[in-house]
Structure formats: C-alpha cells, structure tokens
Image 1 (cartoon, rainbow, N blue to C red):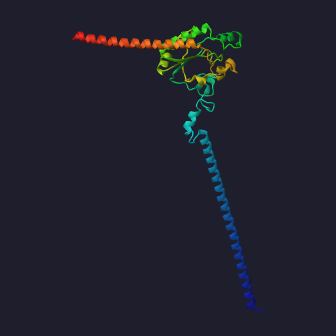
Image 2 (image 1 turned 135 degrees about the vertical axis):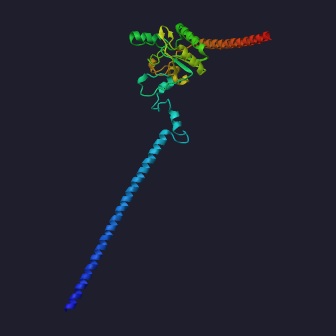
Image 3 (image 1 turned 120 degrees about the horizontal axis):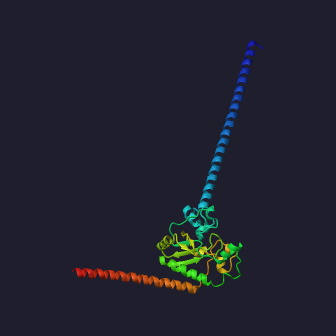
Amino acid sequence: MSRYDRHDRDYRDRDRDRDRGRDYRDRDRDYRDRDRDRGYRDRDRGYRDRRDRDYRERDRGYGRRDRGYGRDSRQGGGAGHLARIHGTEEDRVNCPFYFKIGACRHGERCSRVHNKPVFSQTVLIPHMYQNPLATQMAMTGRANVPKGYHDQPPSDEFNDFFIEVFDELSKFGEVEEVVVCENLGEHLLGNVYVKYFDEEDAQKCLEALKGRFYAGRQLTVEYSPVTDFREARCRQFQDSECSRGSECNFIHPKKVSSRLLNDLLDHQQHAKKRSRGRSSSSSSSSSSSSSSSEGSGK
C-alpha cells in the first residue's frame, strides 16, 4: 500500500469517527431535549394538578360555606339563615332558653349570649311569688310534691296574691296576660311575667316598680324577651305531667281559675271605659269653661 493510500484511509477513518461522534452528540442532545421536555411536561402536569386540586378545595369550601349559611333560593342568603336559627339549638351564639323563657339556669355563667331587650311588651319580676313548696324545700332540702298536686284548684292564698298583683299591674296599662311560675328551679322560682298590649305601658310598669318592696323584699324588674308564652310553657306539663318535674327549664304556669281571670279582665275593661269617660268629661268641661270665660269677656 502506497503512502497516499494510507493517507486516504486515515482521512476516511477520521471522517467516519467524526461523523459517528456527531451522531452520538446528536443522539445525546436528543436525549437531553426529550428528558428536558418530559421534565417540563411533568412540572406542568404537577402545576395543573395542584391548581385543579386547589380549585376543587376552594369550591368545596364555598359549598360548605353556602350550605352553612343557607345561601340558596329557599333560605334567602346568610342573613336569612341566621334569622331562621336565632334562638334555636342550632344557634351557637345566643342562648335559646333565655330567648324563649327569659331565664337561664346557668345565669351569667352561661357560655352563650343573653340578649337582654331594651324594650318589650313583657316585664319580668323574678322571685315575687313565694311558693309554699319552695319554703318546704328550703327547710327540708327537698320538696315532696303530692300526686295530683298540680291538678288541684288554686288555693285562696294564691287567688288573693293573683288578684292583688293583677290589680296593681293593670294600673299602668291594659294587661294581656299574667303568668306565675310554679317551677322550683332557682332561675324560675316565683317568677311573675306580665305582658301588656302596648310597650309604653310596659315601660311605665318597669319604671314604677323599680325599688319597690313586696312582702318585705325589694323587687328587681326587667324586660323579658318572651312575647309568646306558647313557646315558653312546658307542653308535657300542660298535657299531663312533666317527666322532669318541678326542675324543668320550661315554664310550669300556676293554674288560675277561668272565672277569676274573666272577672279580672272584665274589671280591667270597665276601669278603662271609666277612665275614658272621665277624660272626655274633663275635656268637655274645660272647653265649656273656656267658652264661658270668652263670653264674659265680651
């Protein structure tokens, strides 16, 4: 082999190795590009997955919020839901017992809010009625309630108490209802509720009874949120007998004879008519006196 042939062969080998190296580099570059593209795709897929997951969680949170606040066409939005559950067991902020009964067995230690009204038709006089069973419980530590005790007709002492209280409370305005509690629980013991037809009359009662004494004890008077005693009364007590007894948290109203109650309401109506007649006669007499004075002046 001549020197030129060897030289040509070396050049061919060199060109082949160069082409092969270029192929290798191209292949490696393709591999790198493919890996890089796959990494980008994986990264983008991860971004999309996280974004979609965040969107789903956000939408799920909105759904919980909408369900919790009742944001649908039937409930009318969050305010409607809060108004619907106010004063019920679903309300975790306001005390349902204070809202329905105007008293709570936990008192100021209650974990929920007692929204005391600034005006109301109903006035509460706590511990005004002295229950004979409460006196027995204070002496012996327990009250022995005889069977059928609540079905017995009211005693003369209670009738006298009810007449006296009704007559006094009707001086401030027209009374719609008077409820005396028979419960023995501390928060309802001897409570007297009076509901007026007009809030102004309830205000007169509240201002007049502040600082007054009854049976040697000073009265504490406050507005009550109770305006519907059907929700405040114990249904079991009205129907038959309450399973919780005298410690029930709903009102056990002291029974008043219908005849006595009708007589008191009729007396209230007659007194109201008499007061109207006196006011009209006084106004007519004042007008006549003014006209006579004008005639004498002429």
